[in-house]
Image (cartoon, rainbow, N blue to C red):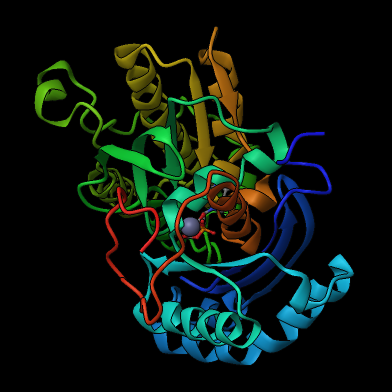
Length: 351
Ligand code: KG4
Ligand code: ZN
């Protein structure tokens, strides 16, 4: 057995509170022992988006019971852990601070090393729990409500470089906004995904931004989704004014196809340009069923790694997975009093 999976592998507690999910998980190397989660999404739903104050308060209330669930499920005592990892950024500052303060207190009380880690690198690292260690270098496509990034991962514990990102809305944000104009509940991604299943993606030709050849030089790996969202709103206005019947399924399918087409095209372009043959996908939008199908259809010859949907959305397992990789590769922990960094750059992996 290797150090990453056997009895000698590090036992790591991971804490995630960067947005609206309180995630606490325990891994031993690459083995997930417990993954406890509490979400304030139902409370957020009536506001149609994440309200930072509600998220912070919900994290405070959920932290202790979620921690207790995780240790019970893993059958361990907190004193057994070798290290603690916590999301230190990027994210909502108040929400991040709840997790970081809790992790700092635990690390101090237990005398354990603490790693304040980057949320985006954690989205990449979670895949090691499912498919084994990532062959490096790899390209990562991260698509969620808060971020849309293409990354080059030379070492998930040391060297991650941004190739491109969204210039405006994140992919998940576009799903949520289009769902809202279609009268679907928040968060909209899963509802659009479900509605699209009965629709015709070719019924409406929505724009694919920054895909034309002339955009290539400046924004080869960047994304833009606000124009697509506006195109959907305009199209709906025109149809409503004309008194035409509107098929929610067709709009959902055509919109989803436009997003998926751009995400897959740019991710494959990054792999082709760099000659890198491993693509890992993460973030809530990676749960999208059409994205998963199109990726496998178009990524011939590439090793495409997409974790199961519950590990794509925010969770504690991703943070624990990165923490264990940091311990295994002998990286130094964070300094005491590290704090949180709401706009942590992607190339900072540990604060
Ligand atoms: O990673 P995540 O849980 O939290 C953030 O860091 O944002 O991602 C949440 C986002 C939401 O915008 C949600 O609508 C989207 O992921 N999402 C989906 C699907 N499931 C979740 N988008 C498209 N299709 C899905 N099946
Ligand atoms: Zn995330």
